[in-house]
Structure formats: C-alpha cells, structure tokens
Length: 460
Image 1: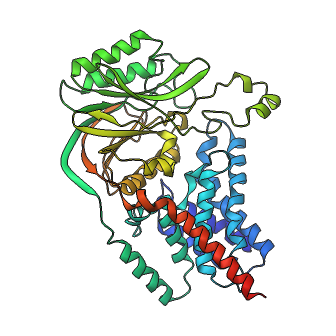
Image 2 (image 1 turned 60 degrees about the vertical axis):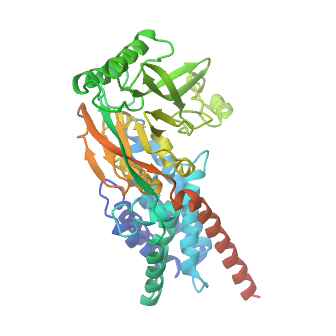
Image 3 (image 1 turned 135 degrees about the vertical axis):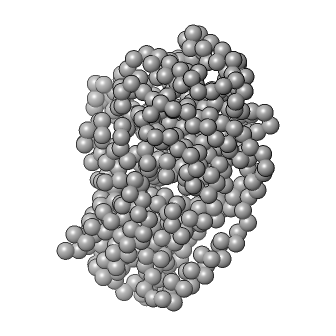
C-alpha cells in the first residue's frame, strides 16, 4: 500500500502545475511523502521516493512526447525520478532533525533536476507552483529555492508550534525591501502571427511563418503607435543573413512604422546554427544569441557515441550557444530577452538588470498541450523574482503582459493571429533573490552536512 500512497501523493502534487494550478496540492503530496519516509527503512524509502517522483513527472511532462512518441517522454521521466530518491538517505525512522533534513534535501532535489544530466531539465520543480499561493512574495525574497525549502518545511511540520515558528520566519521575510518601479513606461505591440501547422513541421512551408507575422504587423500597428514591436522566437523562418528579401522587408516595415522591431529567427554560419533575436531599427542594430540550449532539441549530447549508435546523428546540425547577454536599447529604455528554454535557467534570472524583460518563445512544436500554460506560469514566477514587467510573446500562445507581481494583466487567445498592445513599466535595481538566491542552495547543502555529522557523532 505504501507504493500506492506514494504514487497517489505524486499525482496529487502534479495538479499544482498549470493548467490545473491547484497550489495546495503541492503541500498535500509532500506531506504524504514525508510521513511515509519517516516510518520506513532505507530500501523502502528509496522505492517509495522513486514512485513519488514518477507520480509528479509522468503527468507534468507528458507533453514532451506529444510529437516524438512516448519513448523519449518515458526515458526522461524514469531517469529523473531517481533524483527524488535523495531525501530517502537523509530522512528516516527515528532520525534526528528529519524536518530540516527533508526541506534541505528537497532543495537538493530541485537543484539536481535543473542541472543534470547535461544541462538538466528543471521544468517540473514544485517551487514553480506557488505563484497564486500565500508564499508568492518569497519569490522576490529568495526565489524558487526559498519557496522549495518552505514548501517542504511546512509539509513536514508535526506540531502547531512548528507551524507557528515557520510562519513568523516567513512573515519576517516579507519586510525585505522591494526594488524601485519608476513612472516611465514603454508601449509595446506583441505579434502572435500563428503558424500553418502545429507540431515539428510548423515551418514546413518556407517564409509562411514570417509572412504571417509581417501581415499581422501591417494590419494592426500604426505609424508611431508604440515604442517597440515584438515578434516571437522563430517568427522569421528564413535566415536573414542569407535572404536579403526577408531582411529588407523587415527593415522597410520598421522604417515605415518609425518603430524598432524585435524579431526571432535561426541563422547559420559555417557548420553552426544560431537561435537569435534581432533588433531592427530600419536596419539590424543589435542582436542576441540564445545561450542556454535544449539538449536533444538544439544540440546532440555525447555526439561521438550518438554517431556510432544512430545513422541519423550525422544529419543533425548542432546549434551553437551565445557567450554574452545583450542589453537592447530603445529611446531611453533598456530591455533584455530570454528565448524559450532559457526561462528555466536560474542564473540568467540573476543577470536581469534592464528596465523590463522580454520572453520570446515558439510553442507551435508542442501543439495544444500543458506546455503552453506551464511555460507562462514560469514566466510569472520570473516576473516576481526579478521585479520586472514582462512581455511574453509566442507564435501560437499564450501571448501575455505580466506585471511585476506575477499577474497576467492582458492576454491573447491561443492559436489566434492577433496583436496585443500594452505598456511595460520601467524598473531599476535588482531584487534580494537576484543577489542572494543562489546562496540558499549552498546553505541547504551545509545544513545537510551538519545534520549528517551530528548524527554520526551521536551514534558513537
């Protein structure tokens, strides 16, 4: 029965993720998991933790196999579930400091999810699920790491006194200073041009995606109406460095509107592909190259081995990562952009220092799945963590404006070609999360080490 309870606990926790977004279920699932851990021996703890991990990962990440089949989805989930066994080694029957060990080891679980193997896949971190819950403000105090710690700490509380102490600590964190929002704003138009086909062949017809975004811009944006027009990732499905016609059409549109246009597209240089954003202000003035690439999606890990295993590996061209951030400049404002998968990289969050943030993504490859809602939810978390107002623009949805409290203030329907107009308040400075967030993982690791040493000393 314990395995059944563990699986159900994982499934319950999975409902905290979008689109269901029932944030209390994160606490319910972790509570069941914890109370199973503290009554079982090591081998059983490892097994039930693995089952708990599967209960979360299988439903949350089901969209990863929507077009490539179930095998990649199952491999990903069954491999990542091993990470959830970590608390089994620190929490157990009649062990001292189980509660703090559980919270710290859960922080370690989320650290491993986002870092291994290769560059990790930290998509299914429960710490992303509290954007509508009472712990929301902690995102700006210590980020997803602090939220993960307190979710686990609260879930493992065994007394009213323990909950009261935790509540006092959390309340104290609410008094940390917030960063400055100025009176200045930038008006922006987000172009959701759509695609012909959902799926991996979204760009099967050359220039079709580009022409849809160009037409949507022409039909909806007036001369001088906004400070910036933004197209999503892969909106330009033709290499602007090699196709002068496409490049000239964007330049001419920018000049006609007297407005800069930020576009996303793939370019090639030699044997390398680059996922880039270009700022056209009559001509290309600035560009940014995606730095955090998707394993197996944008590059093939272990290529030497892959070439021996699969005859198709040699036909896959790796993308090359950029090596620097870009602060784009329009009028007197600065902004940075994150491209799709970069959104889940915590270190990039800490580098945001511009007046507002753009997130460009292409969700066409995932159709009408939970991926669209989950990614938007992560963007809401990043808005609070950085204190930034965010323009979130997608080829198919869900294109939105997000304020610095994580609230979606404007949104377009999915899969509809349309333009979303809005304003982004300018922000100065950085949050406590951006300065301190990364150190909480080290602190959790240090606490775990101290607990282990104390237990060893006590067992002598």
